[in-house]
Figure 1 (cartoon, helix red, strand yellow):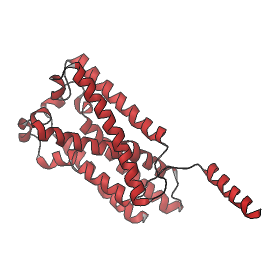
Figure 2 (cartoon, rainbow, N blue to C red):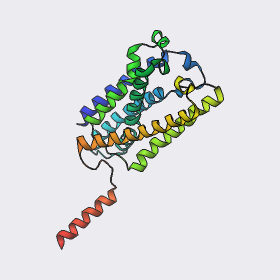
Figure 3 (cartoon, rainbow, N blue to C red):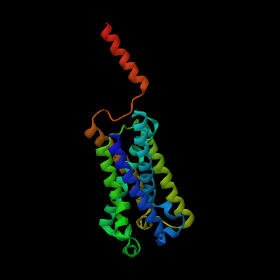
Figure 4 (spheres, rainbow, N blue to C red):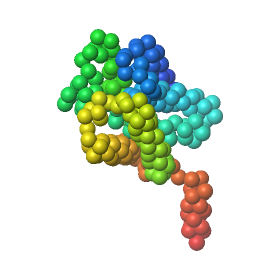
Length: 238
């Protein structure tokens, strides 16, 4: 199983390396402004997916060599998957194509079609959801406690929102064109809804894991497991 998952993870990792390389070759007007690529959630998600599919095959390799599936790399893989890779991968795809369907000029103006190839657009905004859903369906993951997983996601959300607000203040430039035409109350409502959607996608990943793989979906400590085992032995002795 680890060998097959390792092949899948390695293939996805190479796919994202290819996408990241070509993304760096294309310089669009927004990329030349304050913050560069690092102000776009699409690019940050690309780096997170690349990081995840770098850690995942290493976890598979360590599992093969050690014979233990609870090694630290697998635990790190599961934390990255649950708190960032899955919710952000789906968030980027759903929000991009949702806004694109309403008015593409607000998210990906037609002028970019001459600069940005369609296949690369799909790597950034479509395949990030497809591959991470396949990952959830094919590979079993142990979710952390909700306060840990949601805490990591919330920390990322707060840092990113603070970053784009700082860019708007320091450079008088809104990362996403539709934010420019929104009143402040509209921006606050959008950020709140976006945060709620991210949290929903976190739980969606957890529910999907429970549905496919069963179990409680959360990691349990070794101490609690051993205590339960001891209690069972005591009951049998009685």
